Length: 240
Image 1 (cartoon, rainbow, N blue to C red):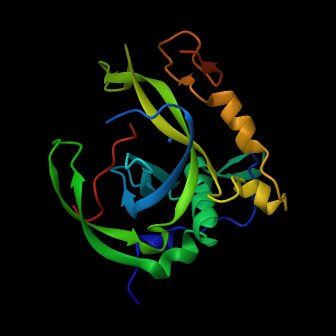
Image 2: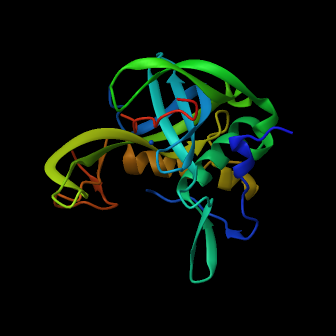
């Protein structure tokens, strides 16, 4: 039997369940958007982390891309503190996305994976080229509502010790903070808890709509509080 990158994605059974919290080119203003999944494929970083790279399209045809890292560089899907295991954030995002759109986990969608050739930008050279990827066909053309944040982050540069540090300049980008069911606007946690009406979507929108989250360490006010005021680049393909 042939092996696949999907074989490495196995959710730990003893992790703590994550709840709902107020906190993923043209930057989208923070808000709730109804989207359709245009692409969803597996990718791997230069350091060995495994991600699910997803392209979302809204009703205006605007495209947003984000990679959810489901396995870290140590080959784990979870982190541990005080003896309690928690799924890493990217794993939870991918899990909730898959369950809200298909009713299945990413692991359960493995039978739908097909090798496809796509046009992908090489972020080292800046050039477009073709790459073979493991496309998760079961996710394509499904609908999901996304809570997307506009964020301010540092433009990092390497210091004399070859470490990445804030340059003093910033840039604006997007990140997905929360997924909501396309029909009911309920979160995964609300559905699992048996709630029939959405509650968190309105709370999230009231807190974040039209605001920018300041995550730049080089600026005052950085942190989780919203600051009044592009997606992460894809990594190289497994087959490049």
